[in-house]
Amino acid sequence: MLYIGATIFVLFLAIDEPEHKVWNGLFWVTQLFICINAVAKSFLQESRGRMLYFYSIVSPAHFVLAKLLFNSLLMLLMSLLSLLLFSLLMGSPLARPWSFMGLVLLGGWSLSMVFTFLAAIAARAQQNAAIMAVLGFPLIIPQLILLMKISNAAFNPVITFKATDLLLLGALDVLVGTMAVILFPFLWKD
Image (tube, rainbow, N blue to C red; front, side, top):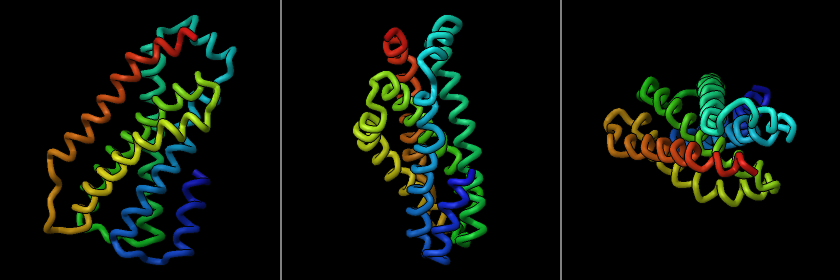
């Protein structure tokens, strides 16, 4: 929470009330860094002994689903807090605030799914930061571009959300979740 407040406060000091495209871009980039700091460390903080204990009491599918669920809830909370602080400190150029809030929740969930899965891979590879950067960049950039494209509709009362874009974002989330459940048991055995 301190990271969210400090980041948004520094943005407020640097840019008082940016135009809507800058506001949108800053918001999603801030969400990306919040997710990396909060969610991506979930597997990296687990000690070898604790992972062995989890291995003895729970199946790998249940473990990764629990991590995905916890990190999703954490990121939803962080996303709402971030949106609140952005709106209070930097103004709100939103024409459709409720639509944008729904998209923020969906986007926060999307980011948490990807980075939870990447954290699981990076934790097992023993090259935490390098693997996160190498694997994360090509996976997250298309998702961020899609989120920014969809969220542009919330700033203009004339433009509407495209259902295909929302379905594509949801399909990406389902794909990442499915890949995590299928592939995590192979990482778990190591």
